[in-house]
Image (cartoon, rainbow, N blue to C red; front, side):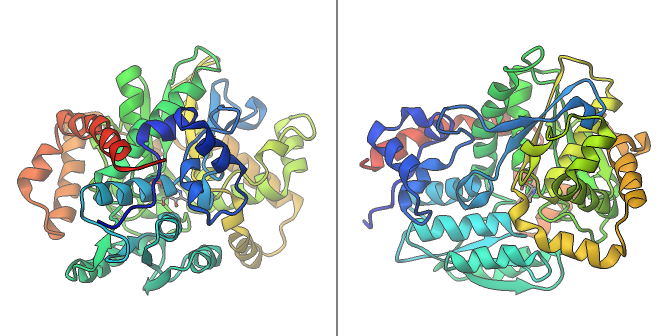
Length: 452
Ligand SMILES: Cc1ncc(COP(=O)(O)O)c(C=O)c1O
């Protein structure tokens, strides 16, 4: 059997300190991102073991609750999407389904998962093809090429991701291709429920009442939203809110427009989205997120003045957020206001990637906005950080709302060949818990199969 390039267990991604010290040290010391030792850096933790996060200043948010933003940009390849790319390939190898030298990996994506697939495949010695829409930010294609993957581009942009799924049907017919299907496969759920969920709970313990009052995440694959299941297992009253672009309000009302928030709002309820633990859906204007990025990345002194923060107090946010990260920040502020969360309450949200992927998006904003003067920036600040309409928040806890979301999911995934009884089992929390509980076995099998 071809030996696999070894990587971490789920437990080691949550607790890298459990790795053999020589491996940990080598992983932290390596400056060559293409060295396979970097697989052991797939974790939310910094070398000092702290979960990487930033708490937004209350003057900026205008709410009393603590808004804790987990930082995805420090993961290898520049976003936490590398985690599900790794676990999907690792589980496929363990199951004997994917072998280096024999198979080519396929990453259907709008960018970051594709970057993750290209990166993990390179480190684990696979050729890979990323299938993604042609209209995404140019920084994404550069990274994918830099990692040596081929690109198979489908028409359109973010909200045309279903075309990438249709394209991957072609690859599924040839056994030499192995599709790392982020929208469908449970390693994505397992990574985020276990690694992201537990890391979020740990980050919140440092602030306020130490609990998680809410989780806010704008789903693409809805992998990140799986953290909700872990948070709710610990804090059953925690509120979970999925955000979506107002221009593509699929979860709210089957809306299917085009939008500018790369990575989210993919016109579907994904197969791995456990809608049982989603309590609210909130719509956010796509351009508020782009303009919010301009404000927080390029106009910090003015934002500090308008928010009443000390000069320099937003410096920690530089480079931290992409467009979807701003969406998550705006959604967290509005949810905290909507639920009347107070001082001591903690809202967890995520910055999937950092600003490095978006200079071209701000260049585009400048080109289409005309002169960006002080008056315009002040108006943007007011509407983005102080505005919001409670009509954009939908409570999806009632049974009829769950039934509606299950219905969307069934119509999408029966189209892609999933059996009705499998979809019916996904309507029970026991399905998700059983998937989660397989982590112990996977970790044992992985540890037994590798030599470190
Ligand atoms: C920039 C960005 N934000 C948010 C998301 C959504 O994360 P998830 O797929 O875990 O729902 C993605 C997913 O690719 C992304 O690339």
